[in-house]
Image (cartoon, rainbow, N blue to C red; front, side, top):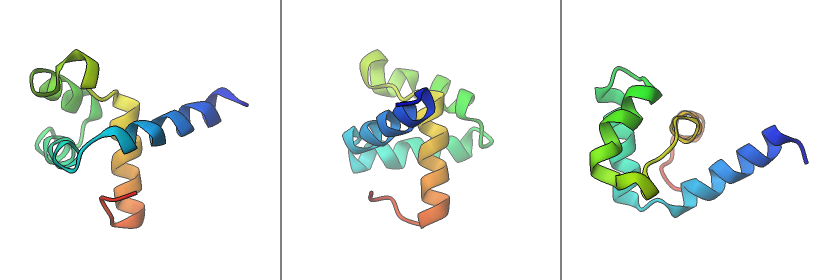
Length: 74
């Protein structure tokens, strides 16, 4: 399995771990942060804590999936 494929599958796994409220907070913060995944992660640091804080890759994949599907739910 290539790293990219593993990374993509891991990101999908991470997406499933977030609650609906967390997903909404990620998306809201993303747009409030000027559509910057780096700034989004920085802004979420205090709200999510270290263990549940999303990565920049997760934020990018999450937003991409929402733009492609128009859906919050898997």
